[in-house]
Length: 186
Image 1 (cartoon, one colour):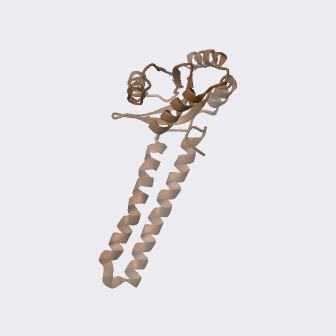
Image 2: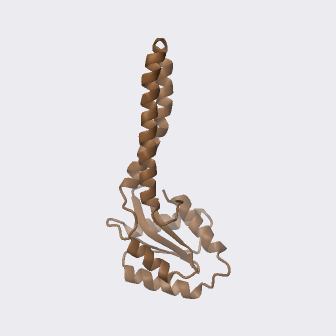
């Protein structure tokens, strides 16, 4: 599963958990077998073990970041899919700002706009929108209208309006906007 697909968050939880466990087991195996076979050279065994622990720790941090957010609601996914037409969508994203991380169920780019929907509690919409505007401005997207919704009805109304205007002929701008969302997302 790749970034932007529905279910990405739960997939990454499983992958990062398994990676952390596997790498920790490998580190333990290296350490204890190294002590058994190379007891005279404990320093080298310790160094090799620490080198293997680094990716295990990184996988554990990734797991901790993803475990904080549930996977997106299937009902929201199905509703978005039924309304989007040919408009590209980026699902299950976690946008990290300097202060906090925010979960967003879906981002849609179309007609000079980027809209998002989040059902997660505790999302400071103004800070998230400001962060996104700053990131897009830094990447030469000056005139983009960014709006993140917490009200599902307002989100679906806006999505329907964008889908009606999009004919699907040239989606290069939309895809580049969602590509940047993918780069900004965990």
